[in-house]
Amino acid sequence: MKSSDVPRMALRRAVQICNGLHALGDALNVDLKGLERWISGEEEVPMPVFIQTVGLLLEATAGRKPGSSTPDSSDGGRTDNRH
Image (tube, rainbow, N blue to C red; front, side, top):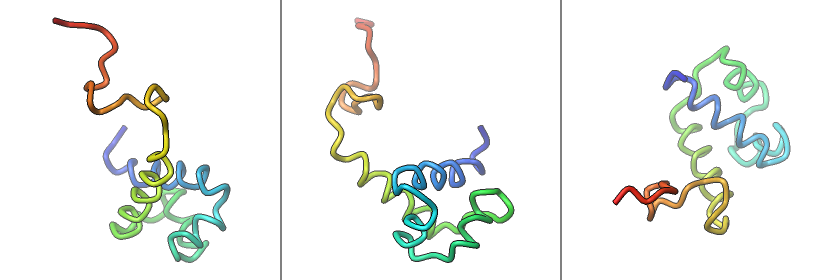
């Protein structure tokens, strides 16, 4: 994965979390056509939009219980004992 793919991938995930392009466009206060161009890779995702998207993703995942699909940062994500 290239680092240039990360903003586009974040937008795609945010579409899922927001249940559609229209809802994400409303949440980010952006034009639907621009959103489609960014997701398709036709245009680069503007940094302010990427930062807002990351904020949405963090908010959406903040309520997850430990043991969900994302490793807990307090244990470094390790599942085995290496000591």
